Length: 87
Length: 164
Image 1 (tube, rainbow over the protein chains, first blue to last red):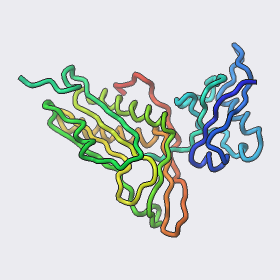
Image 2: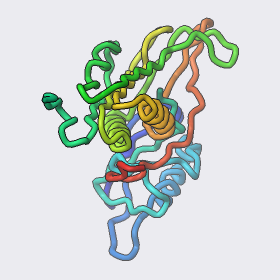
Image 3: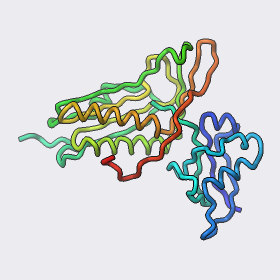
Image 4: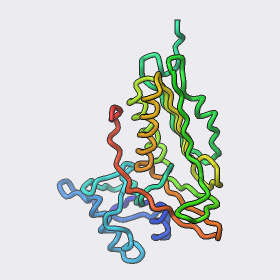
């Protein structure tokens, strides 16, 4: 197993109770990418409180908003972003 | 002879963007735009108001995913500069604890004529609202606090989408 750094902001940080965790993900295999949607499923399967993260949460991979089928690789920085309210 | 101004010599608008935890000085933001070729300078300030949904608000706390917020704010400014063609864009967003009346965001736009400055400023702020990874927590008179409902974040339209 390999790891990614998972970050949580605002409501999601309050929900999870941490701003950052190390998360184990399966080793990268060509042709069998571990995607953003897999990541969300994976983290929600840890049970409370992670299971309260929305299944359609917006995730940024390495500081760019990612689509559901974007691959997540070991060493990536993944951030769970609740709806934004800047300005 | 019109002297060269930085960023205006090749008909490319200049841009700067900054995220800060210190009070914003609007005059300094405005001073970052405007050159001899510009006939309009526009300054927009977002400020903390004392009410939200009928509740009295005493202040706000802005939280950011800082490295990404810096990149996105710069990208927004770059796109705005690309739309302008010539002129300048300067944007600053504040994070941390703010009192009522304080400036949370400042945007200065200069351009040869006013129409494009107004249009670019409006688009910039509309895009900021749905793309900048920043969250707002309101503090109420009774001492309670809550996260403000936001907008689902939109992906950037790409690193080289200056023309929009």
